[in-house]
Length: 186
Image (cartoon, rainbow, N blue to C red; front, side, top):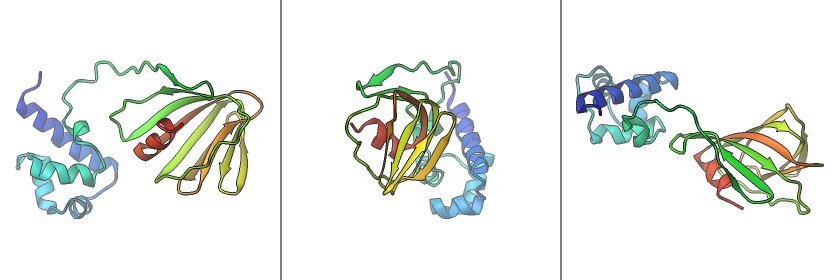
């Protein structure tokens, strides 16, 4: 169990590292969080306490949940053990933890008789075809994506994917909006 000081230092380190990884200056984060750059600097260097009054706006500015900043557990078990779920037409294995801002899944698609409905949602989708072929319906376009190929596209264009000529296996990566749209919809 970590002490309060250890957790606060962990949060400081995470805030600074995340800001730097995103390539954001103190000024850019300050503008997003409606805080001063000096306040953020003092937080990162330990000269100011990390309170909810600054933690909430900073988490929003860095697009990360409070749980990701505050979780004090060690990364003892880094292995994810995916379990299949889904329907007979689509099996899904979650390849990332549910608390992350980016979601990775493995999908096995079975060919169907009906064309899938195209949907829209905020964000971007990316997928890589591990095995088989898929048909990407992207608005009025029909694109065949073969084994070993990847596709990336804006998701405000109506889109759907389907297996062609047999089962297909994919790795898909998307943000929370894409997760809700793809994993939790039929």
